[in-house]
Length: 211
Image (cartoon, rainbow, N blue to C red; front, side, top):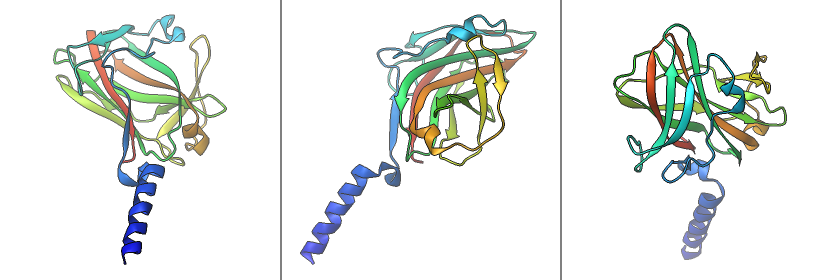
């Protein structure tokens, strides 16, 4: 009996180390406590007439965890559709995780109707996977934006962005194991349709989890 209990204990420890997805693990990728850690405005976006993000910097004015966040300084137009994108390059393997998420704070003086999406590139084709359904942000509150990153799910639109920022929507397809094993970039999109707002929107706690 003692040997059986010892074996069970060792087996449980090994499974905890080797397969965190089975035990509700999460991994914070970016908390923005000390540095921006590579989050930038993409070059292609700076030349677009409908691009509304003027810059990104650390701020201690709002945080969903810790003491600071990434402030996205936007100038959303009142007369047309506007887009703000901030992204980071990396080398990630999300195998075994189920959810990609981030927290976004929209100040109370912002109008309703501003939305957010997560996006990433992964796999040999380097296409962008963008959330098919935007999440509506709430003025004066933090909102968690999350999406399923398991293989075979259809929650993502596939798009191609060339060096000049021209966007081509690709045929719908499910995520593949290769997409989530070889992630090269993560991005956050802030979108609005004729919503006049000039000021900061705050990004914090970008993470993956098994829940």
